[in-house]
Image 1 (tube, rainbow, N blue to C red):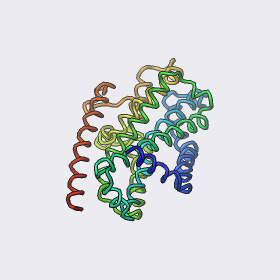
Image 2: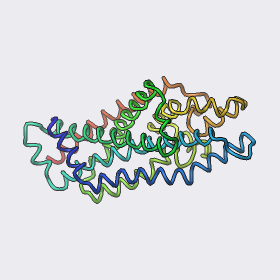
Image 3: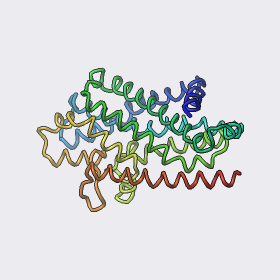
Image 4: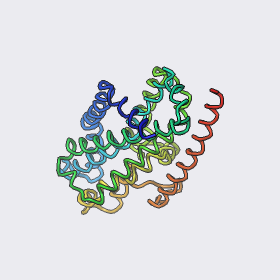
Length: 295
């Protein structure tokens, strides 16, 4: 199986145009966020704190928030892009040849999933490094060994969870044209579903609850807490606690139940584990049905 994992990764990387575009799209997102979304949030903080100009620590806070949002989006889009290798193999009937090997259908599918997660992880990690340097500066990477490990772990979980969520849909995609359309839809929707394009506080309560319980939003919240902890203290150290809490609620740093009680990190991890197990079972069932129908 390791040979097929390596082969899948080589196929994706060998397509230099696709690989370059996956990185280019990340850089374009960074620039667009820096130009448009950052200023909107800075203006909101200035209004809440009743100040005319934004101090450097406020700008830093907003940039860290943007970077955390971009990481969440890229976990999904990069992993989805890497899984496109399986679609191309299905379209050109390569999987039929692979299935007659000693690898078998199950291990073949697992090899596609593992290679997609690995590629998604490294592309997202590159985004994290680029985003930090561009938005915050090189010293933004010096957050300590434990927080860095936490960020890398969250990226890995984000990529794994992303693939688990999209896999049931991918089973029914047979051509690269269908895959391109699906990727466009997901790439557009994921920014809204994770509260990055529009903050949770700007949404109606019903839509806000939908965004809150989207699994990657939960990952994003823990990621924001990890990256923004010290900067939040700097920005709001002289402000009333209510202003800081309002910011954290509005921008998804702290998530809440419909009754407005806070969701703890332990509850987030339990929820993610539950979603992961549910979709693993669903993925297995759908894979079995698709293979049975195909045979």
